[in-house]
Length: 172
Length: 188
Image 1 (tube, chains in turn cyan, green):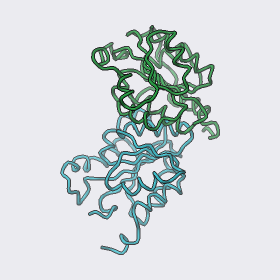
Image 2 (cartoon, rainbow over the protein chains, first blue to last red):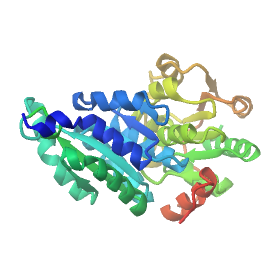
Image 3 (cartoon, rainbow over the protein chains, first blue to last red):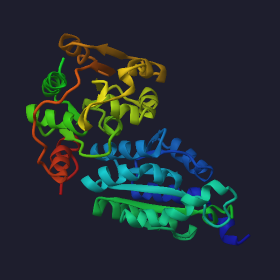
Image 4 (cartoon, rainbow over the protein chains, first blue to last red):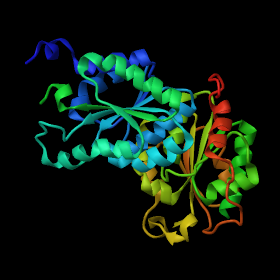
């Protein structure tokens, strides 16, 4: 194991990025890799956190939160991207609504669960087809990239995705 | 009660209260726009099923404003998890009105499950929503709309009024709405 993985806690570094970006509203559907990050968000009185039943529902709730002046993030597994495509297109892209998507990218190299593989392979292409910018920063760049991704979302008024694969979470 | 009558009653109450109003896509938004256009109306043009969710996020972000949602049976059936989320997280300024005409009114009146065995008010109660009201006439709806927070299931007749397509652009709808829903944020 490299020193880097020991020194940087991936959940903590995303959380710090969210705080620096001013994210104050989050909707989520859990992934095992998002567990610690969801704990951090749930215990932060400065972030309204709504666990949702389906990722598409989270897209709607985050859009409403932005209408009300919040800075929203949606935390989910990449399987949830598939559940959200119509909402991302005919709500966020149609009306120009910003959203930061923090996505655990399952089905990436090292994935032990065969069911994760199809969406794992399709995820980058789906984002590309939606013309949604996505970034996969290394842990030491992540704080900066979270801020950059939100700023881009807010400035361009559209969703921006951060994809964190299994290597990022240290579970490769 | 015709749906457009229920919409007229709802927008009258929203106007009197200064409430924000999220409207489901298709004919409900067209009917609302035709009889009661106002900057506080957000007309959905896509994302079927998400009216209740958009309203929920808005009500959580803007606790001082009352948020009303005009939804439909077909759309709620498409996003049933919303009832559980509302039961657990909706604040006191959130009012959901489900106009139940037992069919997909905007696509040719194909029946939904509420035309047969399914009762959305019972489902809302089972999801944990504390105040659920069933109404089937104008008087009942007027009374129910006096609630601060509730889920109202209003039975309306199938059928659409003869109203035009909304010609407002998505950009216009959202920018006009957001100046009111989020007044402190500078609008571009």
